[in-house]
Image 1 (cartoon, rainbow, N blue to C red):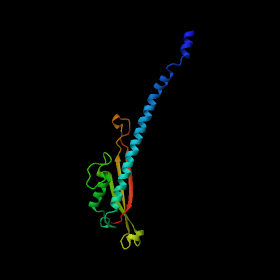
Image 2: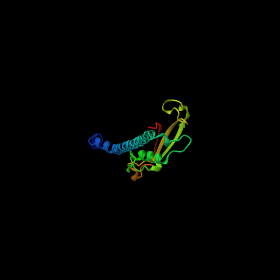
Image 3: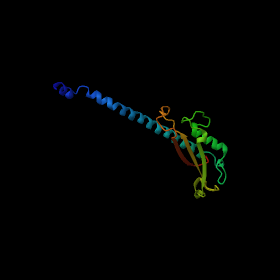
Image 4: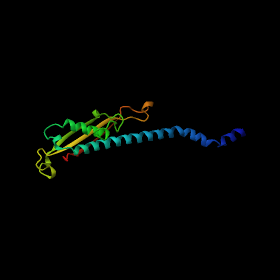
Length: 164
């Protein structure tokens, strides 16, 4: 009987047993943190890409954005290329898997700016460019089958065309 009581009161190895119970939870938390960080990093790259594409398009000549007409094909291709790669001649996508088809470029004309500032005398008003991108998220642990493979990352940005 004394041996059983001594065994129950013995606390040697308790820390090791507790650590063995906590390791799976700590590993899960660590990998969830890695995945969340990677998702937000990818989202940041997509947001930065569309902003840069909109900024680039906002500095193209007004002739590419005729109010009442359609967007110049050459300008649309250049804006998509800058959004995807960062340059008009780049080949490597900033976000793995992002294709030119994942990017849409459109514009509208804001007629409230017909007779003011740099838009004075411009028929139709100020062209406002909209660049949108939606691409699939490449998970860090997607190969293990632990995450949903249908997650998309999307962003949009607007810029007024200055015609510089």
